[in-house]
Structures are given as C-alpha cells and as structure tokens.
Amino acid sequence: MSDNRTPKLPEAPLAELAKVIMACGRCGMTPVIVCGPGITLQPSFYEALCDAVFAGSGCTVRLDLLPSHRIPGVFSGLYRGRAVQRLSKRLSGKGAANTTIALSRVRHPMSEMVVGFAGSKDVLPSYAKSIELAA
Image (cartoon, rainbow, N blue to C red; front, side, top):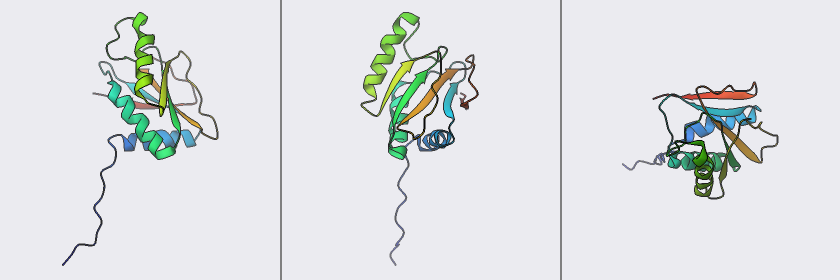
C-alpha cells in the first residue's frame, strides 16, 4: 500500500517567533524581544528572524535596538554604530537595523514591520509587547 500523505515540510527555525511578531503588528503593538542578562544574539539570529518575518508577511523588517541590548563584539559605545551598519548589510534588503532610544510604533497598513530589541533594564512604552528570551 502506498502512503498518500504528503510529507510535512520543516518550518524555518524562527517561524513560531515570526508568527508572534506578525500577530503583534496586526494588533498595533510593537513587538520587543527582551534578552535576559548574559544573552547576546548572533548576527545569524537577526538574519533568520528577518527572513521568517518577510516570508510570512511580505513586509520588510526594521530592527530597533535599544541602548541596553547587547550586540556581539561590541564592548564600547564607540563601535556600536559600526556594528549596527554591518548588521544592516547582512539583512540583504529584507530588513534594516538601527540604534535608538525611542522605540518606533507599528503603522497601519504595515509596509514595514518594526521589531524592537531590548535589554532587561530598558523601559518599554505602552504600545510595546514584550517577548522575553531567557537562557
């Protein structure tokens, strides 16, 4: 007997997180990924997240990096701007990254998805939805 069921394709590694982010955007909330102490996300994480959100929504992604969000290899504020520029280049047209002290608000209709990144010490505005990452 042959099995007529089609194989289930694996989802992108960050597909579930991308779904949560897109749901926040549809509700008018800005999703903010809050990294616990000691967590530093690698550039490949940002790339995969932008790819997953772009694939699910068709929207480009803007990453708003708040002051206490740790960037790999950056130990001083002097190098933060350069590291963020390198990160933006890696996102290859599906997204852009910038440092900011004020989180952007999602606009309707969504032509661009805003995703904030914060450290545990950052204070979030009322229109932000916190998504906690812990080790």
